[in-house]
Length: 428
Image 1 (cartoon, rainbow, N blue to C red):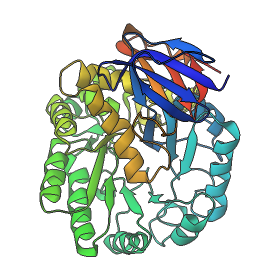
Image 2: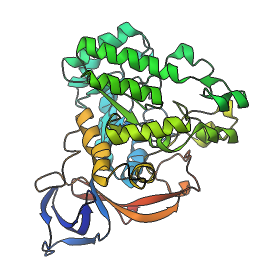
Image 3: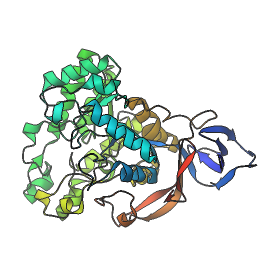
Image 4: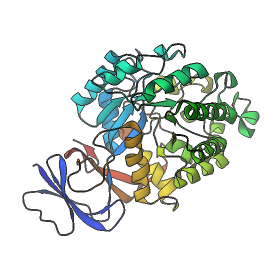
């Protein structure tokens, strides 16, 4: 059935309305719309959002299909309400050529659970020594506009400057993993009281902040765009706020886990809490929430980082860094930002759909819920509250920090260009 009537949904958290989908587009939005010839989805009390867009996802394919594949990762994305994800370049081989990014792009097209936009590496092999084929990746079928060595920092200032200059020619953006490597050698967690008490190598906030300060100045000098990945400290917030006040073209993201979890959890020595950048202090968490609310931090990005069981179920020092996040992101944002009164649902749409689509130039995504727009939509039961059970995840990996934790909200339906990818919480 090509027509779908979503009846009585609170569009962006507003007054109840009907939304009629015809084929791939929204035909009408209003009250009392006719259901003739349409499949009806009763949505009273639920919130309808534009399809979510994640600017920071690790799909692991090619090379680490034991952790995730484009298929399983996009199924996880649809389960979490996402209709588009940007796939990071730290695959095997690295996505530093037109051939690799086209492979990832085509895999996304084949599977159809959400759109996949590859992110190209900034440097060859993520080694930080020589610029990758930025122009060729942009001109490829994948049309890459975002470049990142995420997982590693582009720590050479000259290379970073050249990358900013290069992408400026076609309106691209460099997304920086801000971590000064010499300040984090042997680091296991946030540097502070907890690391001192546990005797674990500390990861100082200044390792992130110093790179951000350098890069916003480089972006100002070059006149280019820079995006800060997974910003995690109160000091980083202040630097980005200062840069924006100067008119520097900088955007920043925060992960759901940095909005909720603190380094106190590391006292359990449970490797599920080991992540890059590390969980910070309560002071940092509240600074990040306030910055997301006032727009200093532009978007929420998951940094979905799947790992196989054996890479996380081991001693802390040997465990891989990272957490899965696509299927819990919206719930964590509801818990930390909406239920606390810091954001409305319209604000969530801005930070999880409109703005990430704008930063990454995701065509057809991050669009208003209005007539004539692509029917990329997400329906959320905001009254739901339940315990997180990773056994039910669509992701191939289970390394979530929320297992057994009660969180609010549940995505019930996701539509990609009018096609249901999730119905009543089940993938199609």
